[in-house]
Image (cartoon, rainbow, N blue to C red; front, side, top):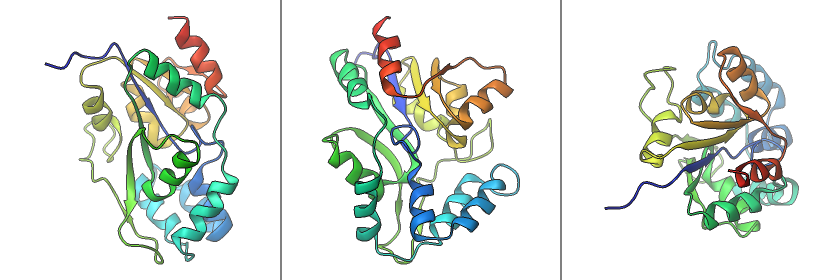
Amino acid sequence: MVPTPERSIVVDFDGTITQRDTLELVVDRFGDGEVRRAVEAELGHTLTLEEVIARQYGTLREPLEEVSAWLVAHCPFRSGFHDLVGLAEQRAWPLWIVSSGLRELIEPLLAREGLSHLALVANSLVVAPPPWIVGFTREQPCEVCGEACKRRRVAELAAGSPVIYVGDGYSDGCAAAAADRVFARRRLTTYLEERGLEFEPFEDFTQIVERLSED
């Protein structure tokens, strides 16, 4: 029987590991930024997260190879992430990247950083674009938020161990609310504050590593 880990770490990708959200970057560079901002304003109101993602990527026409190469050249990681990976490996804490982004754009960035070995859960493209059609992971609608969110997948990955969740946006809210310890920035802090939930703010992973190393 495999023992339950002391703790598990789940990290969002876009805007959390990366300094900028890759969807925002590629749509503003190659697609229609006005459409991106318009549908973003309806997120959680008239549109679900999946609907927003599909419409935003749907404005892209360039080949995947061109967009991916541009991202690799223009999308740096937030400082300290390698240190978090090293701490997790040293202490035998499983670490997963769970993202609402595209595997085809995330994997080249991980490869650039020498981190292709990290476990990744993400959406993917249906076919090689153009057109850009997203194939979603098809999570079942969440009993808490009603969307196909990350909460159930995170619980399955953690397998009963305490969860440290690191995120920054709307897609992280429901899963973070169920985590044992949360490091948050940007929109995720607002989500948690509105619900009276505890979190620790961060700007880079160096801060997270310092706090976890004190445990």
